[in-house]
Image 1 (tube, helix red, strand yellow):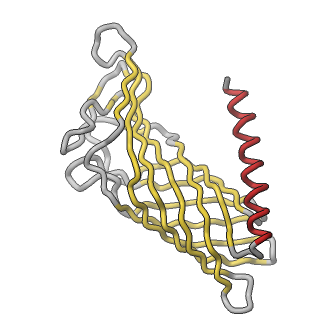
Image 2 (spheres, rainbow, N blue to C red; image 1 turned 135 degrees about the horizontal axis):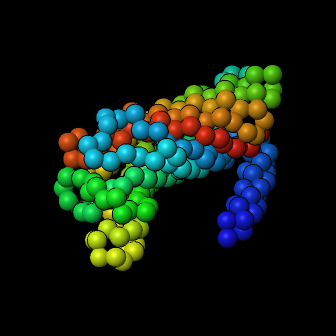
Image 3 (cartoon, rainbow, N blue to C red; image 1 turned 90 degrees about the vertical axis):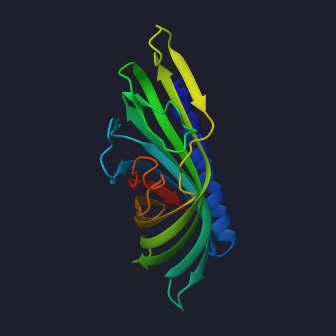
Length: 221
């Protein structure tokens, strides 16, 4: 199953890149499409009764319109995108996600527990091309909450049954968050880092989650 998923993901990625490069070529470089795959490390305050997993994988995709800086190959880009963040809790789960204040319940029987948050992004970015093949980019973005959900698997009620519980909304999330990001790339592959400067949860109504994201990205060269 995992091998099939990896093969399918690779094929989809290759198809994505082929189409992204075609779009950029046909628009003479004015439009860029990209994809980032990253893990989140929280920089907020320590949680009261749970820890996050070391790897909290997420992804983002985006499209930008690129404005040249004079006669140079450097550009200013404005775009739109989608980003998804997953936070995996150790030995804890979100038992009442609809409460005005969010708390996580400790439970050693939890096998898998996560919160997923999805955003619509509006990024602005400065792109500097060096020696034609290298590119360094710096940017900022505002992210608007689209959806959220939580999931837990385990004997959370202590009755010997392995439960799988899903909730389609998590309360107390900020409707808008802000972040900074940077990319350093060679041709179509780049290193991506990002930092969310506002907590995902409202102050005093949930844990302080301010992710530092690091991963790899691809975009049309």
